[in-house]
Length: 498
Image (cartoon, rainbow, N blue to C red; front, side):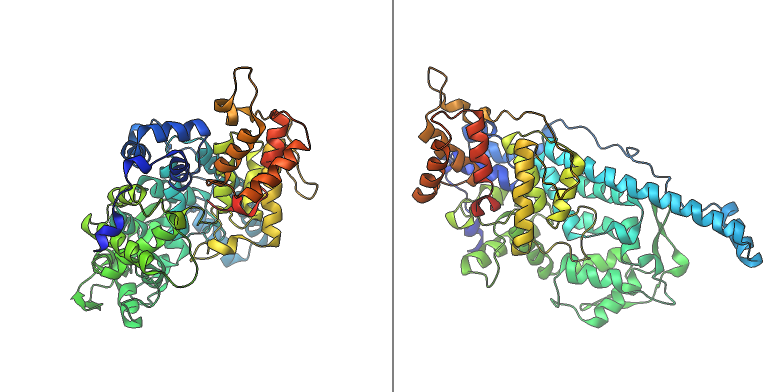
């Protein structure tokens, strides 16, 4: 019954707008020519190209791209200097040490800003959009913030981890995340000792990362899980298991008994039906529909079908994503324009689909922060709420401003962005509509621009309004008119959806 929910879309139904929908959801959009190429491939090949992206060459992520030594721990000699200075109350030495620490922290804050720009650039340029989209998903799922960690290289390592397992095996990623220095530091597991257990990581593993709040576990299970994770810490940039601090006693976790360590604890969790259902629900909201309120019967059936698929594949994500992006339900009317674009989605999709100049990466990072999504700085361990939380009077104003900035290079006075005089040639968006004399029919061009940018056919009223706006500026659909129409379209409520 539930598997029927994942029945595939008929090949003949995979048209141009379905290809645009797929590009928007399985990545960050694409140009009209990319959408047409995908539509011409047909559903199966189009989904394969996006999901089985390993055949697409991409610049490898180098382990040493960023400096790992800025926040490196003190050497034994330095620790001895600190110890002696404190014992003798040597204020001059202590002050010098503090100045050196402040210098390192300043350098590290500069590096995290460079890391933000690097990732935004990668999302814009990648030929593997789903790889970066899933990296973004896991960044919000296993939310870890720089302000607590204060080590940009550890954030970089974690980002690489998410990319490595982007469409891989979720269970394997879960086993790796309990060994990740950034996560260990963020949730205080470096302080989790058998003599003084710290429950933070165990609690969030169950509540936010695998099962969902209050689903199938008790406070006693959290306490036992914390004991299983004792001794899981790190040295510098590497996971370290401190056996002296690990509790080896028999533990009872959700009806199972054993001398569980962190891996055993996770295996108990992953075997629960609630885990696959929870992850299916998170992926549904990220890729299919970020509904608020009660789920419909159809939504419940689809999520349960996703959960069954995930269990059957032993948490391999590729088969699930392939099934979702091939399903008729994914392309149904109720699921198009049903997700509010996150600030990253809004910004990156605008550049990728319209092919605007990037302008200035630091401005884009600033804009996404002002809109509520500062990558590497999630608000808390729950990550970003998403959905309607992205939209308010302040963020809508910034959303409009950043699109005008991308389209024209003009910056609002209140932001410290750099104005840009790089020209934007928007005529590529309507090249396929050119008549023999090189002109583009105004009505056809306007309707197409709306269909492409809103990912659905515009209402007659909306089409009439935009047509009147364009004609008030001339009869030819030249580059200036197209940019003016895009500025108007990107300010529409419908454009906030994908």
